[in-house]
Amino acid sequence: VRHLGPAVPYYDALRAAWLAAHPRFPAYVAPDRPRVLVVTGSSAHRCSDPEGDHMLLRAFKNKADYCRIHGFDIFYSNAVLDAEMSGVWTKLPLLRALMVAHPETELFWWVDSDVVFTDMLFEPPWGKYAGINILIPGWESKVYEEKNWIGLNTGSFVIRNCQWSLDLLDAWAKMGRSAPVREKYGKIFAKALSNRAAYEADEQSALVYLLVTQRKKWADSVFLESSYVLHGYWKAIVDRYEEMQSKWQPGLGDDRWPLVTHFVGCKPCGDPNGASYEAALCRRGMERAFNFADDQILKLYGFQHETLNSTAVYRVRNDTGRPMDTDDEEIGRLLHPTFRAA
Ligand code: UDP
Ligand code: MN
Image 1 (tube, rainbow, N blue to C red):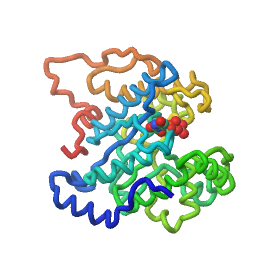
Image 2 (image 1 turned 45 degrees about the vertical axis):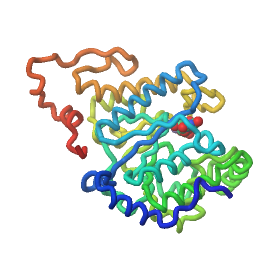
Image 3 (image 1 turned 90 degrees about the vertical axis):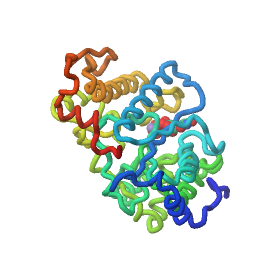
Image 4 (image 1 turned 120 degrees about the horizontal axis):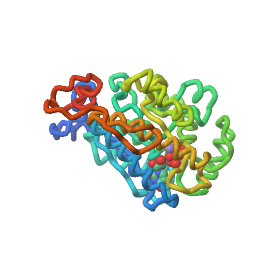
C-alpha cells in the first residue's frame, strides 16, 4: 500500500530540534497562542457554473478577513498534489505536505471552500486543547455509539503538527486511494456505519470509520467539539441572521452567533449532479452569509449592507475630523485585536 509520504522516524524530536535552532519561527507566538495556518482550496479548473468563481472569490475574501483579524496565515491550494487523491480527498496530501514543510506551524485549520466564517470575533479557545491532536466538530455519542457518518464534519477541523497526525493522515488516506479502493470502502462503510449508503468512500465517513474501528489507537487525541459552532449546517442558520443581529453580538461563536456557516451539499462551483440542494437556495444562503460576515468588517469603517440579500452598502457613521476618537468597544476589539500576537 502506498502512503502519503515516507515514514518520518522521530518526527516530533526532529521538529523540536528545528524549533530550537530557529527561534525566529516559534510554534507558539504567545502563551496559549499557537501559530495557526488556515488551509483551504478549490479545483484547478474554472467553475462550470458561471456564478461559481465569484462565489469562491467571495468565500476566500471572507477567510482573508477572518485570518487578518486573528493573525493567522492562510494557504489556498488549486492543485491536486497526489493524482490518486482527488476531489474531497485532496485536503489530506495537502495537509501532509504543509505539515512537514512548516515545522513552525503548530496547528493547521482546514476549511472547505464552502465554509463561511460568520463570527469575525470568536476564536477557538486553544488552551482547552492541550494534548489534543485533532479538534473537529462532532458528538461522542453520534460517532462512537451511533457510528453515524455525520457524527462529525470534516469541512472545518484543526490538526496539530506532530507524528501522531502524520500517522493519522496516512491511515486515513489509505481508504481514498484510487477508484477501486474507494468503491471497496464505500461498501465497508455502508455496513459498519449507520445511515450511510454504499456509494464510494468519502473522507468524512473514513475518519468516523477509523475512530470507531480503532478507537483505542486514536480517540484520546481527538476532541469532538460541540460547545461552539465549528461547522454549522447552513439550512439551520441562514434565515436567522437578522434575528441574531437584533439579539446578540459577534464573539459568541455558538448557536446565537455561529462561528461558521458551512454550505454542505451545495456545490456552488458546478457539478449539479453532486449537489443535494437547489442552486438558487444555496446561492441565496451564501449571499446572506457573505453579507452577514462582511457587515462585521464594514462596520469598522462606518458602512453596512442595506439588507443581507443585496450587495449595496450605505454609510452608518459620518466621517469626523477626529477619526481616532471612536470608542465603540465592539469596533475596537476587531480593529485592534488584543488577542493577536503582534
Ligand atoms: N476541494 C478541493 N479541490 C477539489 C475538490 C474539492 O480543494 O478539486 C475542496 C474544497 O475546498 C471543497 C472541499 O474539498 O470545499 C470539500 O468538498 P465539498 O465542500 O464540496 O463537500 P461537502 O462539504 O459539500 O460535503
Ligand atoms: Mn464543504
